[in-house]
Each structure stands twice: as structure tokens, then as C-alpha cells.
Length: 250
Image (cartoon, rainbow, N blue to C red; front, top):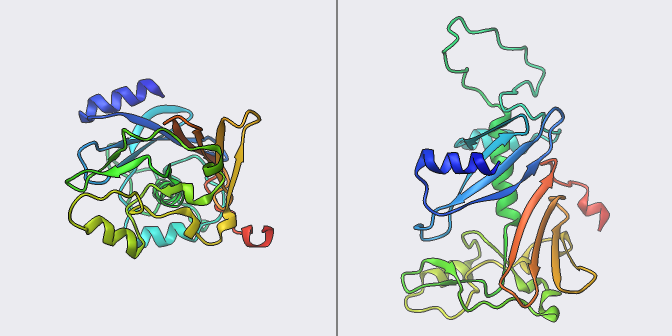
């Protein structure tokens, strides 16, 4: 996978780094997902790439329409691991094309569902510790060089974790537009405003040196932060299907 990441960076002449995002399990094979962050964007924008566990060639996740997004949101079965799969409603197999070089017929396929699921999980789950990001004078979101990590007491509170996405709350949007230097990181949405709050579970390792935050709706997502250090990260390992029974489990 690391070789594939280097190859993709060279092919697209990408600046910055590529990061491992996670793994979505399929019934026949699994998907491995990585992402690249544009270092020049005003807000750190992610571009996603995927490959299967039988073919380590990274492909860009395709753009999907609103119609495809609606279709994907209504599918609740497991992924197959075949990006070209389309028979969600028992459709007949496609006939072999007369021209072997002809592009595949345009229709909703599992690769579109994969893109929707990745972006949905990332929107709901991608986190940063409070204080890890800040705005520069041009209102560009950057890493805070003065961030030294969370304390043990602070790490037990939901308010210590922020969604790493464009703000959706009115307060966050207003702060992003406020002129001048902003001395707060409240421009990012806090997970203590999520509903239900119980979807987030906070635990520590046996040495109380690392905090782990799990999302119970997207079972398989995990975030970690090493206390009193700037180190943190996250990954998703799951079947790509939300836990729709969460309300009955709380």
C-alpha cells in the first residue's frame, strides 16, 4: 500500500502527504482507503483513493451526484468488495461489450456507494483534539504549533474533541467570517453537540497515557491521542454499515 501511495503521488504530482484512512470489509474482498490533504486549501480538504486487497492500485474515489448519494444512503447490506457491482435489486448481469475497450455502462455501482460511505464516515467521525488547530491571519485552518496535548482530566470530556470538517453550526460559521485574528478554536463543531451524545465512548489505556474515542454509530471508527503530547490520529475498520440499532442499545 505504501508503494501504491508513492506511485499515486508521482502520477498526480501531489504535494504534501498521503495518509491511511481505513479499511471497509467486503464479502469477497476488502477495500483499503487513503486520503491526501491539499496543503494550500483554506480548509484542509481531503481527496480519497481506494484499492482492494487483491489489487493494490489506488484509484480516485469518483464524484457522486445527489441522486447517487440518495441511493447509497438507502442500502443497508454488506459491501461485496467489487467496485463494479450493481445488482442491488437483483438486476441481470451486463452482457459482454462488443468492444472490449468500451467504457462500462454508466449506472450506480458499489464504487459510488463506497465514496458516499467514506465521506459520510469522515464527516461524522473525523476528530482533532481541542487546541490542535487554529486560524492564521488569512483565515486558513492550520496545525497549532503551540499545541502540547490533552491532560488526563480534559481528555475525559466530550468538549475536548472537535469535528475536523467545515463548521456547520452558526457560531462556527460566524467565527470563520469574523475579521481579525481569532484566539479560539471554537470555529470547529464540538462533539458534545452531537445527538445522541452517548454515540461517543471515551476510554484510556491501562497506563492512562493514551485516550481512545470510539463512535458507536459507525462501529469501527477509533480516534486516539497520546496525553501531554501533540500526537493523535484515527482510522476506520468496519463493514461500512451504520449501527441503526444504537438507539435501542443506549
